[in-house]
Amino acid sequence: MTSVPPVDWSLAERLGARLVDPGPELPDAELAEVVAGLRVAAERADEIVARTTGLQAPPGAPPLVVDRPTWLRWNVRLAAGLFAPYVTDSPTLSDRLAGEATAIQVGTVLAWVSARVLGQYDPYAEVPRLLLVAPTVAAVERSMGVDKDAFRLWVCIHEVTHRYQFGQAPWLPEHLRTLVAQVVEAETPSLLGVLRGGRSLSFAEVALGPEGRAALASVTAVMSLVEGYADVMMDRTDAVFGVATLREKFDGRRNAPGLDAVMRGLMGLDVKHAQYTDGATFCRAVIDRVGVGGLNRVYERVENLPTSAEIADPAAWVTRVC
Image (cartoon, rainbow, N blue to C red; front, side, top):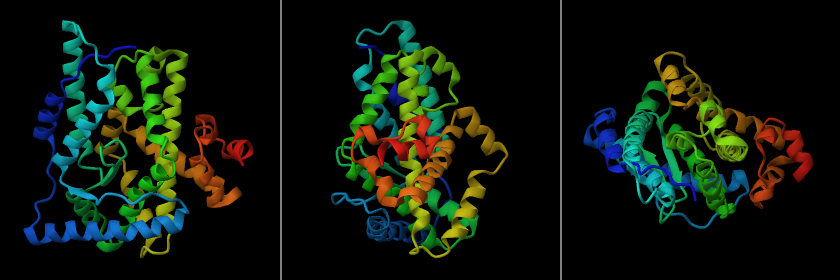
């Protein structure tokens, strides 16, 4: 088994905690209203997602409504758990220095991302959980000038859809873990590169070799499906007031030029954006041909997942699977 340098995850957590922007200062009453509103929205979203997607999932744990530092700590520990099996037992000085450098990168990136993430579903937690980042939701709904109840419900539909995807395909978390292991086995030079994933990391793709590149492409294809499917489903419901306006304003914010766009590119987060857009395009095209029920065949077995080539050619996936 290929080993990776031991990352100083406590350093990543401490650095991230110092760098993170806690978000808007809300009066206690307003903060309590945001937290309660998100919990209500998540509960409502459950029935909407079941009806809209046609997927099934076992009952989920109550959502965790968190602040940005808590989200950051959660994700540092998630990364530490995912990569623990590959850490070398006998690190050299060079390994330790590389691990510290990666910790600095991870802490810095997660601190920046924490101000932009609205929610997250973690299928790898001891009890899989939905996290909703209250200060970021509050800041975005203010900046967009939208109905707060509609926006919170819309966000929760996206995140709850992830719970149904993984619930319908309980083999999916382990499949993703296996793909990441294949990337690590290909001796990627940057653990952060694996955490980012995606097509913009050409330096890593060259170093990975054919097998590693194939595994990385598979990770990107799966994540494109997961994120694109959730984006499509949050727009298909008639239960959210003004959903078309929400999408227009949110995409305008997501695609806005300027420093934010520059930082996304520097950190490789433009890849995450591509996953949403490419995956959503794939899902819409498949639904046009075979309906939501046909698209849901992706969750029946590993072999039905789209390849990276099929994400770009939905008709090829329909021909192969349907």
